[in-house]
Image (cartoon, rainbow, N blue to C red; front, top):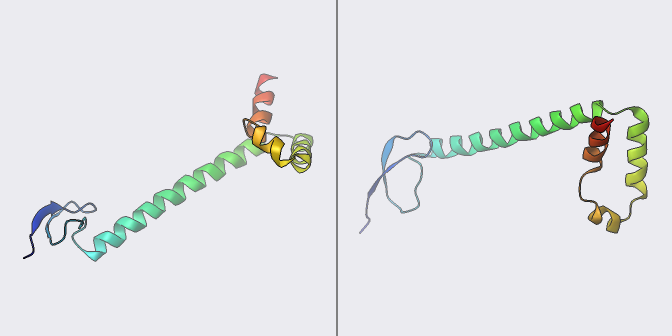
Length: 98
């Protein structure tokens, strides 16, 4: 015997009867739309981070960038693990203190 449970859809919030205990959506369309909405939010966060990095790098001069690349190139894996903050953050912090 199946037990029907009244629930609200997690995507459209319309009430529906859940046949199984783990049903969260009223239809396949709502399930897929909810999944796509989550992917879109994830992409927006990635774009924001890329914009932040691009803006941060544009604040540095060419010699500073070349120097940072030299440090990264010569750095051993042990030194990389010991570093407490990113090289970009360190350079930006030094630039703000000047």
